Length: 303
Image (cartoon, rainbow, N blue to C red; front, side, top):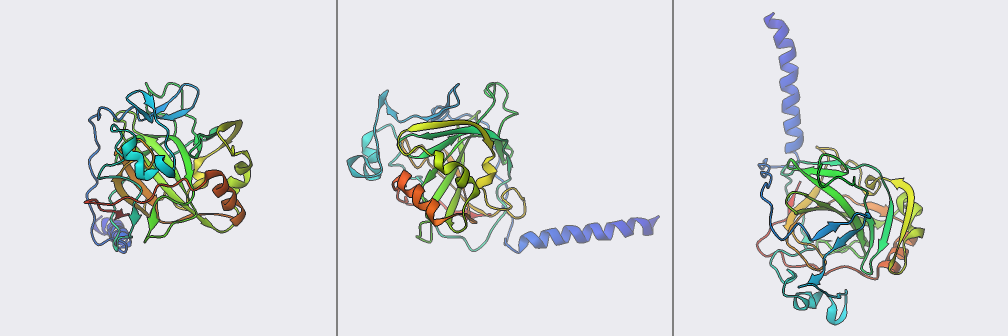
């Protein structure tokens, strides 16, 4: 019986050592996973509000008065902090930032995707092209359903994703042609988790081949029963525990009210779109990116 146990124990130990060495090749040490936040932060839950009709609204009022903002001129990013004292646009933990890739990667985030299909709800809100994502009507009373990610054991539900051209985050000071932001909200705390994915020029993108012709070129929307899954816009191995590679830091919304309630995860691998597709995106989006903000005391970490 002793030899029988040894026969199975040795391969098991070898496998455990191999798994440790595999991850150590991209990490000098393992960092503890941060504990989940269980206390609601008052004032954050209403920043993004899902409506009963499937719309997703980002509050940009100032003491009840709607404030107009733009990407240039006297209402551009340099002046957002002046437009409303209630906004956080002059804060010390703002986004986007310039990412200087750290030399070592550490397993610091437990991140898993559970995205279901959605029908098509495309909105041009005057600032971006946004896809509102289907969620169950009773999600507010039952959080254990719908499309979501789990981040360190907490659920963040996918509200919407939208586009920026050029990219908002930069890597070593360089922009990509475009960037997608997948916005998730923790329904208990109001905190947000946003996945950023860069688009660079390459082969034609099948998702844009299907939907780009339906992007409203001015404020308006497009509705269709055609379904898709947001994972069509994610890089390969995005949901593979060992092969995930992203940069992460704590920051803010990149548009007013610039609330500093966002856990950012920006993928290091990219997706592609053709030159023609990127040109059309740029014509619709009109350089809708905020310049990078100072990191101040924050760090960008790699996983």
